Length: 66
Image (cartoon, rainbow, N blue to C red):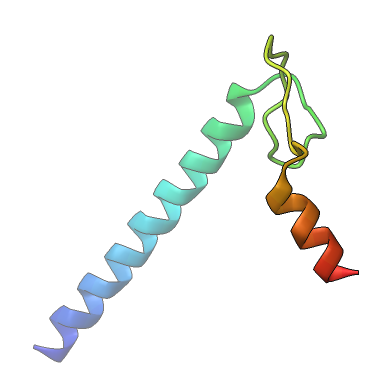
């Protein structure tokens, strides 16, 4: 029983490592262009991003924060 478990674990480890190597090589060969965006999606958007809008709540926050 102990030997069959060890054999199964060995086969599973080999199969897992082969699958992982295959996945990594497929991912690496699929992308011909390399972008240095560190995982950030780069693109153009017609919308303008608004991160701050002057409101009474923001005025109160800044007044108490300073």
